[in-house]
Image 1 (cartoon, each protein chain N blue to C red):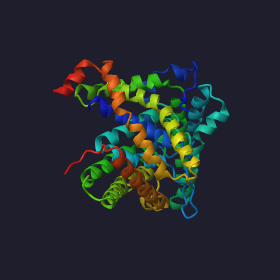
Image 2 (cartoon, rainbow over the protein chains, first blue to last red):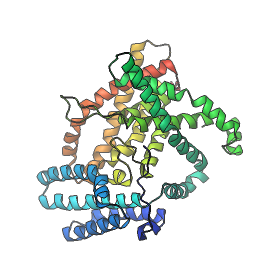
Image 3 (tube, helix red, strand yellow):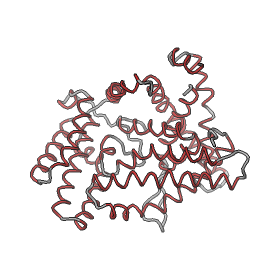
Image 4 (cartoon, one colour):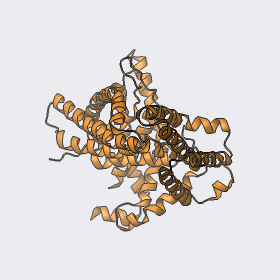
Amino acid sequence: MLTSLYIDGNSPLHRVPAGWKLTLLFAASIILYLFDDWRLLVLALLSAMAAYLSVGISPREALRRITPALFTIVILCALNAWFTTPQLAFAMFLRLTSIVTFAAAVTASMKMADFMEALTTALKPLERLGLVNAADLGLALGLVLRFVPEVFSDYQAIRQAHQARGLPLRWHTIIGPLMVLTLKNADTVSEAIDARGIRHQASIGREII
Amino acid sequence: MNTKDIVLVALFAAIIVVLGFIPPVTLAFIPAPITAQTLGVMLAGCVLGAKRGALSVVLVVILVAAGLPILAGGRGGFNIIMGPTGGFLLGWIVAAYVTGYIAERMIREDRGGWQQLVGFFVASAIGGIVVLYLIGIPWLSVVAGMPISKAIAGSMAFIPGDVIKAVIASLAARAAYVGYPLLPARS
């Protein structure tokens, strides 16, 4: 249910630090907008594809992951060929496909922990200003992963309760109880967290003041 | 943010993730299938209010960026954020905030059920449709190089489904408000 899209391996792209990969991805996707020459863009697409396949993903899985995005891109570019010019639309198709492919390569070669570390580093300036607390963010993300299976089994219990009573499955009669059932845990969970002193003492003290 | 707020934010993010597993509904008179996940964005604002609602969407976006396939249809990873529809995903954060901001000001405990329903609907429609499209459509137009008028026209196909979602969100939000009120009231 919650398997990461990371592909284990030791390819050159795996060895590039997460922060660099993300910076490279953002830079590349801006730079690609500066060129309209299809030859350059074909080159970009080929290198993105090479990078994507170099992480050790099977071609079939590689394609499966970007198919929904490709589908959108093809539709948009087909419309664009009509609205603008076929040349511009083709350039846009190459550009968007390159970006999406390279982004999928970054995702496949980056461990979740490495991403979190890069994120924590990026948030440091905000943390100094007191706007975010990286420890609280980590705690919250951990809680999400911990509770998704729980919420999912609550969802199935509510569904079965509907079926047992012969009620039609309607979103508004399922989601309301699902939210109440889930959110009612908040007191118990937060008491458990505070009882174990998981959040830093200083941050708890700040709340009291 | 006290510990309970953090827990509520995380629990709601888990709800949004689970809503992505619910099979989408296709209605004959609507061109695009309706997914329950965007409903969760409206509900985050309606149930938790502006700040906590937006933060729970932030958690979902971070997990998508971290490479978890938690969006409806098992999508995830940076390719979603960088793609032509990435503006809608990032726009969720602002959408939840605005929905919550309006709900906090429109919903009162002493009002009748209908008034609360209408309040939740207005909040969901403005935050989850108007604001979301104001971010998603220009992004689509710039990233895909599509004339803005065409991007607007194309997005209209999703409006009927989104209005239905706002109706369902207001029903579910009121059910939650009656069962376990969490929305901070502000004037």
